[in-house]
Image (cartoon, rainbow, N blue to C red; front, side, top):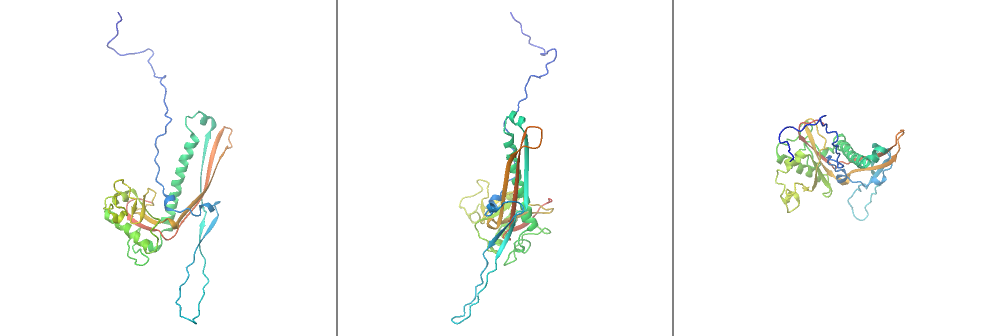
Length: 311
């Protein structure tokens, strides 16, 4: 009858090293998170099809304003005017690119499509890079019209305090955030900005403050049902609301911005082609060159709220 040991350690000589246990690599990628981008939602691309190369200029015309005069009756002399052309130049003055190289042997042996994985990530990084640069150009370098920003905003009333770099609005309470949004809306009203196509961009911190207010009322949402049930703000006082981590931030203040898609324009013209780099190794390379442009007219408004972070 066989006897089996019941005590003692199981040992081998020489000691087992585990060298025959394979290392397993998953063919599924881990989730990667990217900053939200909304350029295509807040800006129009009406002239994107006319973009060709970096360095081009697209001249965009606007109908001139015709003067209305009083009519003095029969026999009065009518004065005719020659309308003055109004135009805005869109400069194709930006360029971005990425270039990815993959060894042919490595690509053949890999258990996933390396080139697609790399170019997919690059496309997302390109959107974030362009949006970062556009936001800084629109809201810091160019800024809003003088009547749409500062402590005396309002083209007609000059009564809306939207904060300044030196004296930003205290965002300590949700009510202050809501009041600021309503002032920004009123500032656009005084510029005769249409209600359709308005947008508002908040930081995540401002959004959570705003969600503490009674925004579920139909007066603000334009909807008889609450938006809190989904956690998304949606429409707020005629604004389509977005949340972004890419808004410019200052040492003592940060921006809350609003505007109209009809007067914020952008566009890209891209070319992508596979090529073989000058290398003795077998490899493939995909290069994408993007020419881009953006401009914003005065129909945007910028509020400065207190915070502690550098640009």
